[in-house]
Length: 277
Image 1 (cartoon, rainbow, N blue to C red):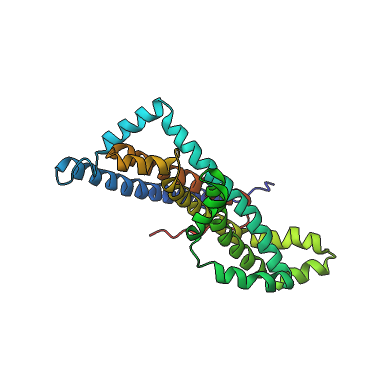
Image 2 (image 1 turned 90 degrees about the vertical axis):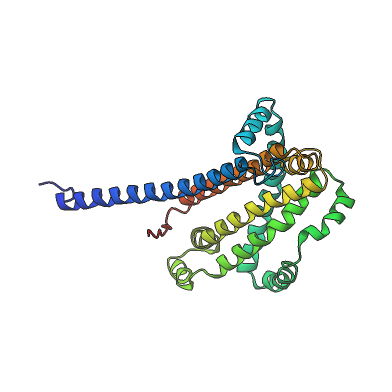
């Protein structure tokens, strides 16, 4: 006697799988269509003569310039400097922010000591203290990384804090009834329950890091994508400028997709809800 699923159930599972693949295919097709429409509009406007090529070069010209810069490795040099600064500040903010958020969520004393501080200082634009950081650390990497850290640590703290506080009390009671100690409860209950909130903070902080690295490189640097954009703009080299703009967009796209992939692999118990129109 066979112990496998019935033929009817197997057919239903296969049909559901085909529907899921088709749904993902249509979703990707819609995304690709929107991107192609934007690029097509850009190319039409660039060749129409309505806008000066100094303001809006053609996509073909931008890609040609990107290929030239990639060939002499200058593009990779600028990308490498920007990614290094953004990642160091972002990773430091992630580690420190998660630790502080867990402390605030689990210990009343830490919550009382730090919650008001973060509530008051969160709305303050951290770029306003960049001159102080430059005065202390100079125009090198340290001041840029420090500003990125200060701006990114807030979403990490807040998301971790509220994720820790949002853990269902029934999970604590169930774990204690099964004899789990504080360390096991933290590892097996608190961290998995707060993980979706933490990844939301990470996904918020990453683009903030990229925006800030471009701003700080525009203010004072001799390398990086921000420097490439501002220097090319001042020199009326619009193709180079758009290479820098598209470069930061591609870097952000890659990092965001890596975060989404990591979330799906690490938080495997949380199923993503898709709405198919």
